[in-house]
Length: 158
Image 1 (tube, rainbow, N blue to C red):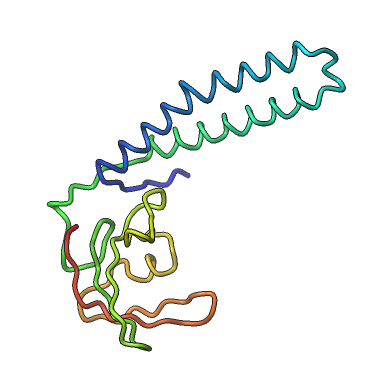
Image 2: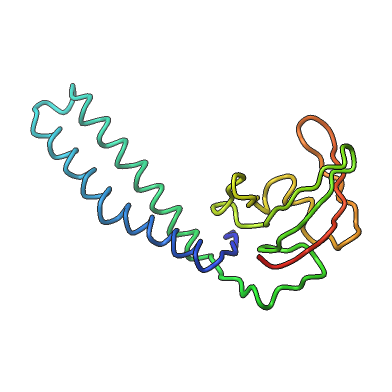
């Protein structure tokens, strides 16, 4: 079962560029490393060859996963976002009810998440807890060290 992921145009472009770099630069580099290791003699005792083959396998796995992600990627038209609920690409201002602290987060796809810039994944505990909530609602979110309650203060576009 494939999982649809929603991206901003910039996030999707970044993903495509990374995949292209892996295919055009990293894949040929891995092949050269295997060829160099193969030229060093007996393959049955060649740890360098085994390591190069393993690295190539991991690279191919990464490429395949990125291709699958891209095949299931959808661009979200931010102008069509429903601002009555917290959805992917919504900016949400929340208030932690235990300490009164307010925070701003933008809900994004997992690969675009970057806590330093306030972007949290919709698959994270907080992201999941906020999805579908409206202004004024309380989101009760289970985290590893207990439960947090957040009030939705505002929902906007980026």
